[in-house]
Length: 261
Image: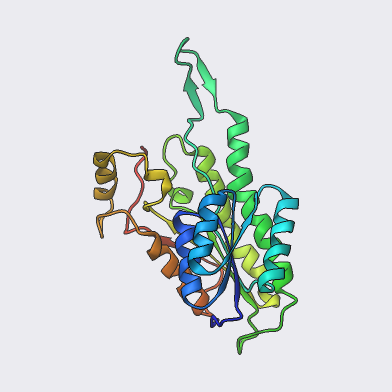
């Protein structure tokens, strides 16, 4: 699908990291980009930089999503591109130890539910709402294509490490959604693909000391470094441009396979 000056796009989690890079890349290609995020300071800064729109949205709240979509569509029209990057990482083993007593402690269920709610349920809710509106648009490709949805899974979906039960489950769910949702939307001319990033330079790594970052980078076979958010954004742009990319989950990881810990 070609991006034109009238192409509207939505990027959840667009205030930083992979989402911000994607918002910049789509805007550079000519799209009118709306950023959905809870970080107003960073979101407004990115929106101002790219001439886009920031909308405060909590992807776990249906009313917030509906209000955000209405605001974005009022400003830019119905989106033909929807990229979901909103997500969190949480580390917790299935069974841990109480530091004071040494007693075994089960995984905090509320934390597990929070990760699933944001990463998986939030992703599905946004893409289903977006697809419903895309389906009413006129086709813009010779094949009858109306829009493109790109979701963000993770290599943890396939090789979840110790302490990643919640995160891996959420991202595994995102990956598993891809083909059935693509099949569901095939009659509507809407393509769906998912990206599984490996180790990328995102805010989750900001607090790590230099030696820890270097160790992570050295674990990547080639290129032996952390991925750059712009490289994720380039893959999003390639998926949008290539009409045969549909129902697929693509690893973007420098050939890394995560060790148990």
